[in-house]
Length: 318
Image (tube, rainbow, N blue to C red; front, top):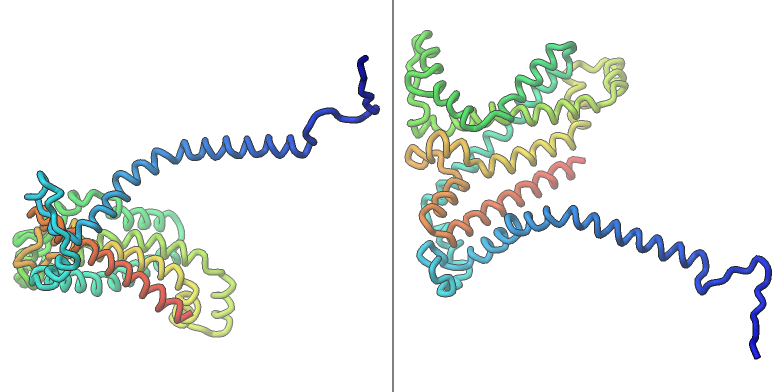
């Protein structure tokens, strides 16, 4: 005897409701999109892990060991010395010299670069026409120019019989040997670094100036404020976040200054242009991998502390 099931007209068959089926379809689509996204991101993650993350972790661990080039054949014979490499650094006169040189480079180079960049940005912001675009490209050109090409130009300028000394001779001044004089070598590199990096900050500051509302300046003008008063009381306070960004960017670059010393002076004369980054490079070249790793993390800590200090100072002023 068979039984039949009566289904009312308009009733739906099936075990799942429409909402459940739609929810399941949506979940499958979301999972498929996530897999596709991870598929695109995986090559970058792999490259970052192999060439950035693993070396960072490895060098940090290496800074607590006495690992040298002699231990490459027997890496398991390396001894853990904890903070001994860091203590060795601060007992090394050359490392202390490199810290002093880097500090001078930063303390002189950052304000000089920011003042010059802000002056150029203000001049370009007040100008009009194609001449502004021409100078904007011209001032930014050194940023995208190869350091080798920049070094060739500056060596020609700073040689004993170079362009600068030839110009000084025309007015009866005998110029020094800029790159081989312990007094003038570091200032020469600072001037070169300012010339090379001022374009980056100029573009950033110019963008910030163009974002300042015109009605604010117009209101200050109607109140009788001079151009200097408008700059100090209106423009610079509104430009403070942009100034912070520029200061952080240029600080990180100047604390790591290496190319100028490597190309122009090789850290000389008499270590007068020896930066912490160049000292680290030399220690790797000498095969002192543990010591070089420790030096690189001292530099990293200095960069982190300076950036944090800049953020705190500007936030406190706000």
